[in-house]
Image (cartoon, rainbow, N blue to C red; front, side, top):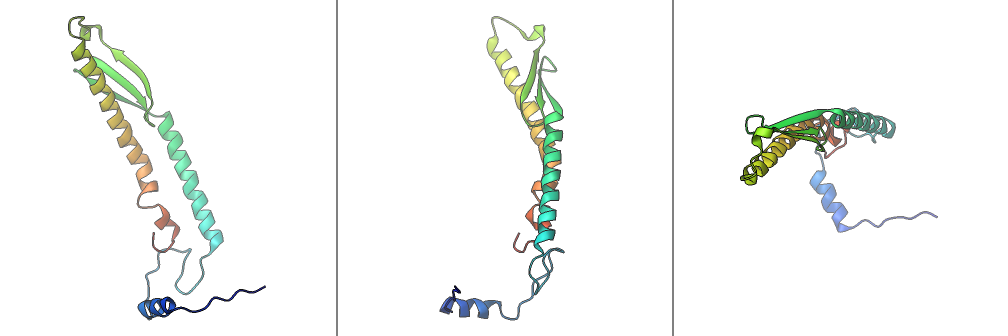
Amino acid sequence: MSVTRRATRADGLRDSLYAGRTYPRRGAAVQPGMPPNMQQIMQQAQQLQQRLLAAQEELAAAEVTGTAGGGLVTAIMSGDGELTALTIDPRAVDPDDTETLSDLVVAAIRDASSRAKGLAAEKMGPLAGGAGLGGLGLPGF
């Protein structure tokens, strides 16, 4: 059974809007006037997925260290943001001033978290940002 679609006024408007325009080539997978090469697009997507997985594994294995109070409190995080260790120098412990210790712990964790985010941006940025779907040669991405 074949289904035919009736032309609408919108089709005519769309055709008149885009008539005569040429668009720059965005990648080897899509060429002007040619249908996309799906096999090539799938290969590129698979390569991108493999690079993303490798970068995620690198992040999970990496460690970053944040400090506060001149090294009195040290927080260690994995590259994917999991707190793995917290070290408090005994000189930072004052039973009469636990608020300062709390502030130092929070500051060390924030420092480590900031470093983990920076590492993630460094590893994932090229994959997730500029070389994302546009790197597949898909129009409009």
